[in-house]
Image 1 (cartoon, rainbow, N blue to C red):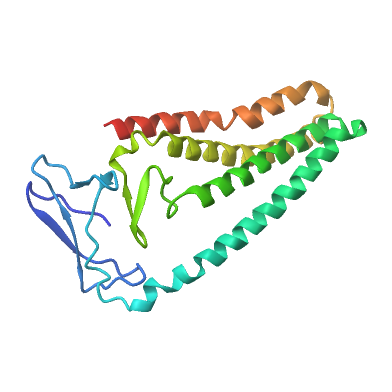
Image 2 (image 1 turned 90 degrees about the horizontal axis):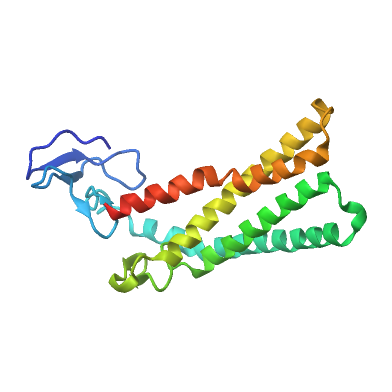
Length: 229
C-alpha cells in the first residue's frame, strides 16, 4: 500500500486492501509516523511496519488451518523429489568420472551442471529440515507458538543462518548460470565452429561458478550494511 505523508507523532489510516484474500476493506490498516519523522520500525521484523492486524479479525477460522494441514505432506513430496534428483545426479557424475572415454569438453560442461544441481538439492535439504518455521536455525529463533517465531537475543550475528542462505542463493544462481553455459557452449560449438572447444572450457567454468558471485557478493554486502544501520 502507498501511505501518504503524515505529520510527526500521528498515525495514518487506510482501508484494508480488498485484493488480499481474507482481508476486509471495511476494516482499517494503520502506520505510525514517529517523533523523528520516520515510519515505525519493528525490531522483530527488522523493517518499517504497517499494522494490518485488524484487517483479518473476522476471517473464518478454517482459513488459518487449511494450509497448515498440508505443509508436512508438501514437505515430504518436496524431499522425495529432491532425493530422487540427488540420487540420479550422483550416479550420472560417477559414470562420467569413472569412464575415461566420457572425458571430453562437452561432458565437462554437463558434469559441472550436475554438480551445481547436487549442491542445490543438498542445500535445499538442509534449509528445509534445519530451519524453524522456515525462518531461522534453532540457535537463532524460538517458536513460542504455532506460527509465532521470536529471534533469540543471545543469537549474536546469526552468522550460520546468514551463511546458509548466502550459500543457497549462490548455488541457486550457479545452477541457473550453468544452464546458460550449456546453451552458450552449444551455440559456440555449432555457430562459431572456428574456435577450439577445449580452449574455451576454462572460460565456461569461470563463467558458471564465478558469474553468480557478481550478484551474490554485492547482495551480501548490502544486506550487511542495511543490518548495521
